[in-house]
Image (cartoon, rainbow, N blue to C red; front, side, top):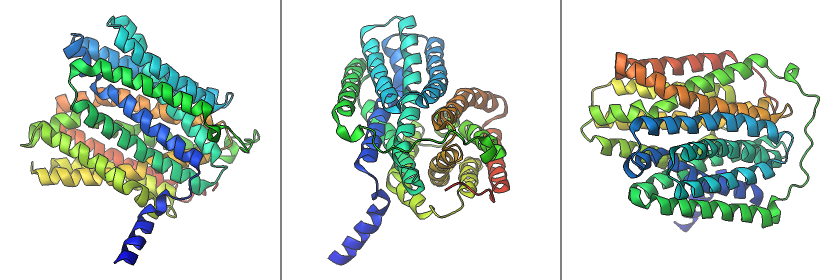
Length: 401
């Protein structure tokens, strides 16, 4: 029995082995930053209930945040090819801590608008700079790169889940204490990076300046961006039309929405590392298409009779697609541009996801209101099928591994 348990434990921990202490520190930073940036999902409640802003004003502030995410992704991405990404990560963390201090001290809408733009800028800028920094530390070991991207995604989901649980049980009136604790946490992270010798760059390979898009499949690059944009539209429905549909159609209402989000987070935290480890030798471009198809198909399943068991099945299919699509698309994207301004292109990757989450809720909301949920879910299914078709078209492209 003990031998069986040991074998089971070794099998479970295999996907977590092989990462250096520096990469684990990077994943830990991702987890902490995801918890603090997860506040964005609850800021509308704070603005409306505590600061007594109108719904229109609150929505405008969230739009300003979204604009900051796009600009921050591209700007920090370009700078990472010119400035040490470690220093840019420090800058983004410091900027986020200042934002939380501003949210504590000021209630003026214009100051808060500047703060939210800075929060969006620094959140996506941090993701871009940290990923560039850590992927550089993988020393072009593609197995390590995929493992880091995969576990970082687990950390992001876990961080958002912790933020959701934490903020769900805290009254809006106490949000200022949360802002203060988040500011202090981020400052402590900055201090830890500065004094930790493991974060000092060493033996990083110099990137070749000779590589250009003549050595990269341009069509694959553009098609990847298009697929990421389209699947981003589907993902954006999770924060807009999806909760409304679930709460209206199924008898559990908002409790059903909460259960499905918790189920998604739980499955990702437990299974994602092992799923990607198992699929690591499969064709990566095919996997992107399959993942995107699963995500679109899962929403078509919402057209089944309103039995909550079907919603759970839809959530499981969605989560499988999400676990495959997001880390694999990021890995293939990075692999395409490894020696061709990787920071800039990772910034474009982040900006594309951010842009899709700006236009997605608006376009999805219009479709939902004008044509209904069933039509919207069918369109999402068609997008998933299109992603599958595009990726299978490029299935024979040989990646530089």
